[in-house]
Every structure is written in C-alpha cells, then in structure tokens.
Image (cartoon, rainbow, N blue to C red):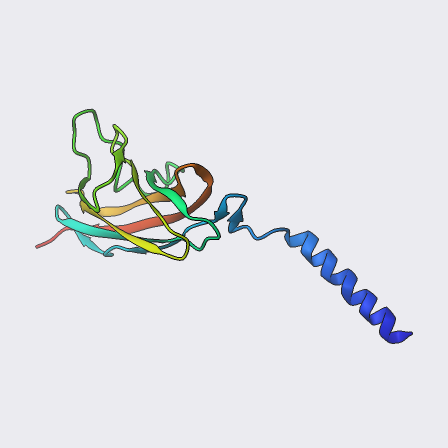
Length: 166
C-alpha cells in the first residue's frame, strides 16, 4: 500500500510540475525558436569598421522559410545609446556591408531579410559596422525570427565599449 501511495504522490508531483512550467518556451506552434551566437569585439576602436557575426541555427522541427534580423534600441533611455540606429532617408547608417547580401532591407536600414534555414542547419551573417567617433558604451537589442512566423523569435543583446585610439 505504501508503494502505491508513493507512486501516486510521484505522479501527482509530475503533473503539478508540468502544469507549473508548461510547454517548452523555445518551441512555438510553427517550430523551435532559432538559436543564436554573437561575436563582436569589446572594446572596439572609435571610428573603425568592425565585424558583427551572428550565427543562426534552426533547431526544427520545421524549416524556416526566411530569416529576419532586426536591430532596435535597448529601450530605457538610461541604457547605452544604440550602435546601430535608424538611418535617415538616403543615409547609409552604421552598417556598411552585409554577407550574405540580404533579400530585403527596411528603408531605415535596421531590419534585414535573408534566405530560410532548413531544420538542423545554421547560417552565419556578418554585418560590417562603423563604430561611432565618440567613445562610450553602446548597445542594441537584436531580434531574429522566421519571416512568416514572427512568434518564432529569439533576441540577444549586443554591447560594446567604443574607445578612443592614440
């Protein structure tokens, strides 16, 4: 009788824990959220062009039909100013080059669309970013998502110290 109660208690605990934690937050109805790695120098010399490398992996269970990379401000005005900010009309913005070339770019040069990624594969995207002339701490929020399923998204924070040279 004790073992039956112990098994029942164990079963109840399992059900309660599953209810508390719910479904996997990294999986949506459209598939798993992308996995991201970011490589960028910290510190970075003022006025130079540096490479920001983002590797996007698709954990599945579905292919990603397109990949969108969006840069935004960190939010709170007390946080560092953006490294990559909305570019004025006809201005190039902080991003000087992108490999591979995006399929689409927003007019303000902060949202970029790329080819999709098959389940289990990854893609590396390199942005060449012009560092500000002023020394200081800079940052951005970067959101990567599947173009047709924006809920299948993952964000990462980019931060760096820009230092004067010489």
